Structures are given as C-alpha cells and as structure tokens.
Image (cartoon, rainbow, N blue to C red; front, side, top):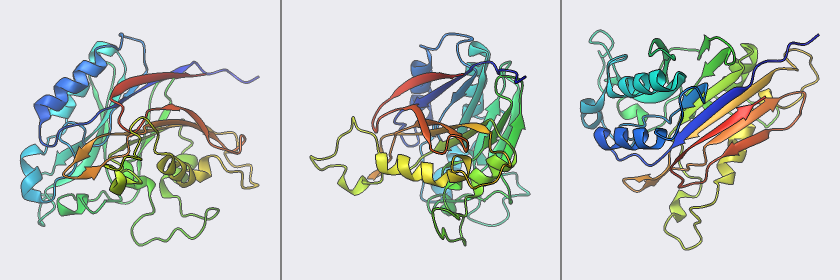
Length: 300
C-alpha cells in the first residue's frame, strides 16, 4: 500500500529589483510578501541576487554589496519572513568570501543561495558552480557538485542550483536532446530530490527586441520555458530504465524581471512537475515577463 504524501504549498516571488538599491528592493519584497498569511505556504522562493540586482561588471562595483552568510540583508529578510510565515525560504545573494578564500583577484565573492527554516534557523547555503560571464568578473565558482538538503514533510529532499547551473557546464558540449549532458537535472534524479529549486537572473530570449512594438510584456518567454524543460530532460523523459522511473520532482525556476543597464531579464518564473512515468513536462503555473507578484500553488 502506497502512503499518500501531504500536499506541498509553494510560493514564488518575482519583481524588478533596482541595481544597488538594497533598501528599496527589501521594501518591495516585504510589500509583495505582506499578502501571504502565516502557515499558508511550506516553501517561499526568491530569485538570484534579488536584493542587490545582478549586472555588476567588476569586483570593485559589487564589493560594497557583498553579504556575510547568516547576517547580511538577504539573510535578515529571509529569517524575518520565515519566522512570520512559519515556512522555509530560499533566496539568492552575493556572498562575501572570507579573507583566506579571497586570494586571487577578482574573486571577492560567490554567487550564492541560502535556505532558512521556519524558526529563522540557518539550514544551509550553496554557491553557484556554472558561472555566467557577468559572474566571472567577481565571483568564485563552487567546487564540483551541487547541493541538497533533507527536510521534514512535506518538503523531504530539496536540490538546489542557481541559474546557469541549469545550462551546459563550461567545457562540456550539449551533444543532443537525448544525451545531454544534463548535470543539474541528473543530480536531482540521482539524489531522488522531491524538489529542485533554481533561483535565476535569466536573460530574455528576445532581449534585443525589448523596445520593439512587437514585444508583449504580458506574455511568457516561451522560448526560455521550452529551453528550461529541455535542460531538465532526465527528470521527465523515459529512457527505458526502471531506475527512479517513478520519481516525481517539483521544479521551481524563480526568475527576476525588469532591466539593468540595458539588459532585459525574462521573468516567466515557472513551476514544473516532472516524472519519467508521465513522459512529458507538466507546467503547473508561472508568471509573465514583466509581472511583479507573489504566486502560490499546491501540489498533491
């Protein structure tokens, strides 16, 4: 007899942070989250580097915004929300390296994510492994491997990556849709993760056309959503093997919206439910390109 798991309540926050304006971004995050009632969600997710913005082009420009784990503005915000809402909270932030780590310029920080528990306790953190070109101007990549955390029901096991971790790792070649490589998705499958959370600052697929009349801010960046699904292929595509075939994984791609220094972000945060027994990606819900909101879903 199969034991039915309790429902899982997931909320995502998407908005347009202002580059370098931590105070404004914090107020915006709190304003959006003020509509969430305590004990109404199990997991609340924010995008990558949500309180600082993303487009820092040098170690010098980002250095004033680097945060110490557990005590920085993002940790304080997530701790406050976790305690008020009695839920787990994940968010991305630029982590300040210790003196012993920051030995080689320009590596002054790490593009990181944190996980806070319902009582405001620090559960753990993760540093981005696969750096985007903007990250490389200041960030140190994590060592090999991704992170996962075992939590009480209804979350169970959460795997964590950040934005470009979903992409093909540097030095690898995506040979085909069937054969990958699919590092992050394969990790989630191997570890039997119930949830995969990916905070993002993912660029719009058609960002060069942002100012054209044809650009629809109320649409979804379907090209990016399709690409995300393809990069998650091991979690939903049957391959003839029985290993983990019944695994059901909720994938949270929590992206930011807006523009910074002419760079346009995709928004289009998406919640997926993926199972190889189903044989296709199932989109539970999401947001549009420019939407600023908190949205929640319940998975049974």
